[in-house]
Image (tube, rainbow, N blue to C red; front, side, top):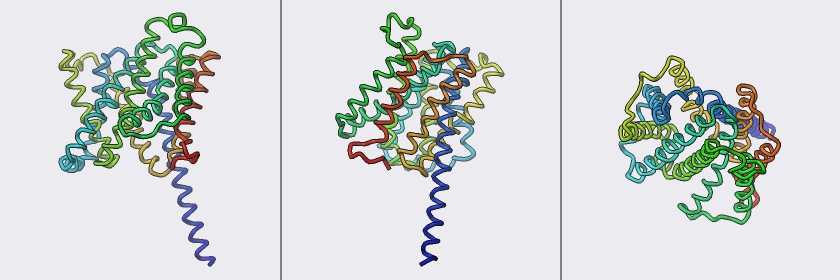
Length: 320
């Protein structure tokens, strides 16, 4: 009996360590995304937005080649349904969402970048709403109530107690709307990603998503007549792009998915709060930008409602 108890205790300790490592990696990836939105990507504002999106996918995709080249054989065997899911995920979460959020970050010109980043936390609202439409998942009254609170928090975060016309100029309003579009696009990618992960594991899915988004953005640059203006990229830009590629880009995504295999979804949702926390802290430390009183109320309502949506399902039990 003591041997059995000792074995069980050892397994519990191993599982506990794995959970701790997974939670730490998700916290790190979320903090890196906050760093990206507030500190790194805005430093590329001298470049055209579609070209930035291309570089932020093409460079990581190139860096993945020596490590994930075997993914090509698995991609060739993927069914048509998988390719459709890949194309939809790359378009929504890869190209459209990234175009919208980078444009929003560039528009505010370092003025409360954390607001733009925080508005992305609306993503679960869009994800669950789209899951109801596309996958037939049931929408409860509690979800609808939490979604209303989240939208109210987003409004306070953006405008305070004023109307949009009174509280923000046209640029700030456009940036907020673009951030919401990005949240919707990323939410759609979350739902559509369920189809993709039915055909590929997360490594192959990440590799394929970056490759497909690179191809789509290259086509977009050609259609817009922008081309590939590499001469506009400064040495400082290249350094920043490389840092993003290795850390807040593909690096953070791999850390996130690796951590997600070791923790429950409810734990991951708590860990993801490192994103808004790091965004607000870095925006203050780096840009000397502070949220106003009603913006803090809005941020609290937004994050609280998203936690309610993400952690407490209809049966009252934590997501596993």
